[in-house]
Amino acid sequence: MSSPIRVLLTSLSLLIGFIAFWQLAPTHVNFGLFRTHPSAGIIANGIWGFLMTIAGVFLGSAYRTLSLMKLKEGRKTVGRPRVIIKRLIGSIDLWLGIVAAPLVYALILQSATGLSAAGLTVVGLQNGFCCLVIADSLVPTLKESTQADP
Image (cartoon, rainbow, N blue to C red; front, side, top):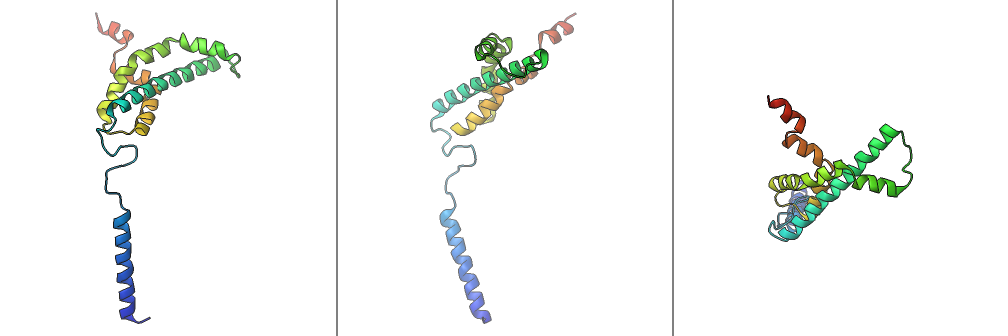
């Protein structure tokens, strides 16, 4: 091929590529787990996010309960699921997580503005699962407060 034709074809393909990119590129802000319009469905997303945080608290507490049963009792199987559920509902770990959930969710909302429902689901489950760790890092424990007081 001669040089002028090569330059013309290269320029033409670059122009077509640029036009195709321009047409296919998104014109609105929608990145990952963030929604396009931050004000759209804010109350529904807020309720959904808090429910996902509570679900994460349940999952985290169930994980810790099962881990303790495995470590302390040497269990290899669950046995009867009703016993596990009863133990989980009576767990202080679960109720501490439920009480701390509003504080943890407030931290989520403060730091993650504009999350979509999918983003709130992921972040709510993660933070609910680790709710006790987050709350313990923010609120001094009884042991620390009694040591500080003379």
